[in-house]
Length: 403
Image (tube, rainbow, N blue to C red; front, side, top):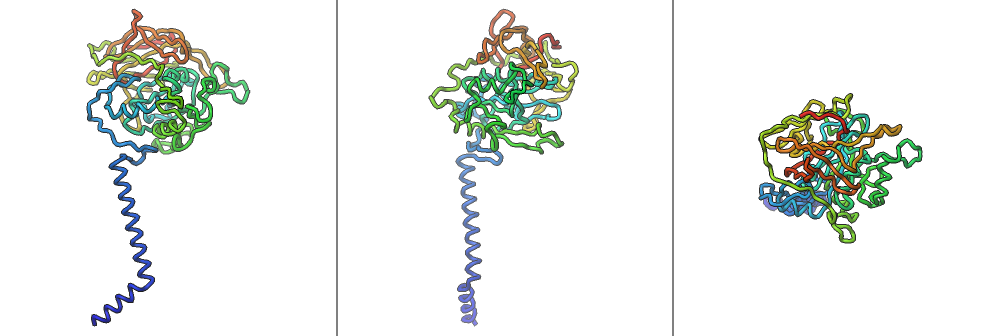
């Protein structure tokens, strides 16, 4: 009986069917083992996480001492975060604020945000990312087109900052529909940014996936296609490195060689005299009216837009700022058939600076497109910003601000 069983087993082992089954099982176990080994290695050594396009850095311990000052807004970060941003240059990105596109993605990670009307009383943001985006791959949305005055502010951030957008005001067709002094794309060409492999990242020119992609399901509602463009900052930084726009260019020149940083100071909360700031850009566009409410516990201002809390879709937090600046700029327009606006960004003008719960009446000054915009108090002394996010509201000169 035992001999018969042994003979049957030997016959089974010798069969082709058995060998095929064993081979498949072996290959499956080998593949599974390799996959688990590679996954474990990546998690242990590189900290790769799902959804981080192009990201290979380890997870940063944000509980470590914050000893490093951000040169953009003065906020303090860990040494590990500084090690990351030191190998990069700032990203300046156009993010829209159409009421149908809210809430935005990624703005809570911006170091500085500029807001101005794009056209028709609808505002748009220029968001500056450097330090606040070091700890993770920040996804931003919805990315939209450029305007000339936003280019003027982006040009303050050192030599050839990364400029991310989806097209912009131009007259490449020669139709004359766009006035000469608001042609943003032509200005980018004159700056030397808009060349193949340059620091201008434009979806309609030379940049696509994985830097930019359409996400029609970002919000829990159907929106027009123009409200769906997303971008990965890590993917943009990876591409920038390939193009020779890391912290240094191909000639070894750092982006911040001539960068002028603002002055910064620690929190110094006072008895609040400016707890509620409210203003509009255009009278007939209440959806874009802004209100900043002072939060004494955090010594910061919380943002409301169109009468509701303005939140970041990714972090689920309300947008906030340590400093809210009202930059009164001369408004002109619409200047052409495309309803483009023009705001004066160089020269001088009035400004209001809100920080620590109080208001400072002052002025702003910007000598040239690439010069740093500076803010002075009523005695002409440069104002120190409280360490943390800075929001600069470009409001038409003559508009009222209530506080």
